[in-house]
Length: 126
Image (tube, rainbow, N blue to C red; front, side, top):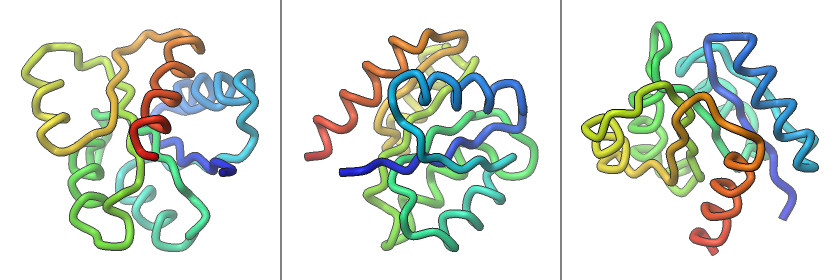
């Protein structure tokens, strides 16, 4: 299956880091969104997106709210979502897990960690 990623982060720098990490892992197909609302618009307009990597802390619609919106949408609810965030406290991780995030990375991260998490999600969603 060919993956098309949606990278959601209000920080251009973070979007670049994630995009470059994906390129280094051999994934060339991705689009970017600046916040949760932008991400929902892109998901609504592009049926080929099949993997979301999102930050948590963003103005407007947060990553957690984006995750909840994806899970409550019949068309999108099975979309893999990887949360990449500075929020590393247990309560936040539990909250994201309860909202059915597929996996969670605490910033800063290495491309290797990103690869492992993507692979885990893909193996678990088969």
